Image (tube, rainbow, N blue to C red; front, side):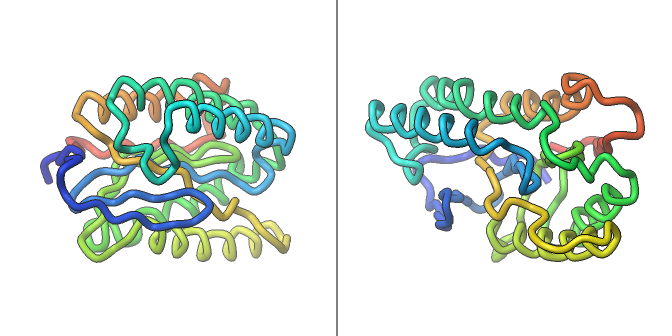
Length: 213
């Protein structure tokens, strides 16, 4: 399936949670999940405060963020998305995804309905978070599909690890990929994330389907 860029003039569905989730038919999403213990509370509090100030100064809300001009959206992601991902790469928490058996559960879940409910693109499973590209079929929402993935994998991982309670942080971070250039940048980011975080072979899973765009 050919890449379809975000069209600001076409209909967008917005699904609310703690964060808004934008979806437009045929578009590709870059999604990040993190484990419940992956970000220290103090960092998250400071990051959220700085982000809220930036949004007020630029007179936008989380719901209207994706309608910013490309240069302002790039500034936002540089200041906040990149900073957040850098903190994830520091390896806070129990990092159960460092174990191959735990990653296998997540990998199999992400690929289970590939070609049926969605087209799964590149992904990387890191010790305490996951990045992936996905193109959802019509009628499938990002919010519902992520909930399904997380519910199944958290139950299986808890059984494997002999633990109870929350595994994934409930909210997913996602945005629509606006251009082929942005898609290539994200694919490179996914591929280089383990190296950037200083991981060794066997501590992560990298999936790169041939010809996916």
